[in-house]
Image (cartoon, rainbow, N blue to C red; front, side, top):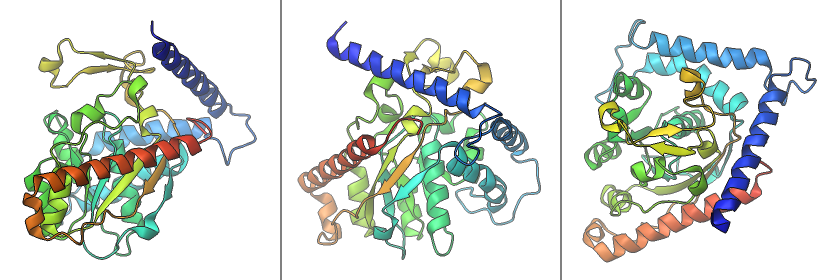
Length: 320
């Protein structure tokens, strides 16, 4: 075993020990720090809310205001309290940098990818919707393999998820809607715990080219904490084709707890929005300059990586 493996195992053991202490403290009904800790009642409330929301998608009266991408205002209204509970009490999400984000017109947000399930996209959409003066909800891009799972595509579409492809992103931006993109793709979602927060290569400069062609601001975003919500310890690749998954993840809770193992861990999140990439000087014709696009893409990836590294060093612990 290499020295790096020993170090990563030590980090994992420490994080799991922190998790054990955190869960024990949060389930302590006699805890006096109710304002800072989740009580057992709130934990059961989360389980119950998730169960009720998952069990009623498409069962209630539908809104007539469903756009061409499937966003349903009724479903968004119904799930907003759950998302706020997750943001405020479960993950205690802290947001910085929104003062630098343009409020007028569409914006292309580019973030590091965190885990197989799109909790990061949902949280970003929820926080940006609450911040925007008109309450506009950005659309977050979802990987191909996820939208092919039973019930996943219509459920995510009603909440603002859109299949990740250039055509969809361009249509959204040109129609005045903001977009949240994760250019690491499945490589970013499939990272093991030992490789967490190491940004993978961005795919062919698509986000930079798209921002230049559509003339929209490109805002880098750092998300820290989401990768500990579902830490992947091992990837099992047997039977993945029949299941429609890139791999079957083994986490501290899945598959050991069955369906409950799919619930995210209560890691503390930090989301930071950086200043927009300076693309104003480039005209639409610059999108054909492959060297320029490649250079700007590496600048974007490097900026997000530096933001992630800074925010990881600044936090006190994974769960606090």
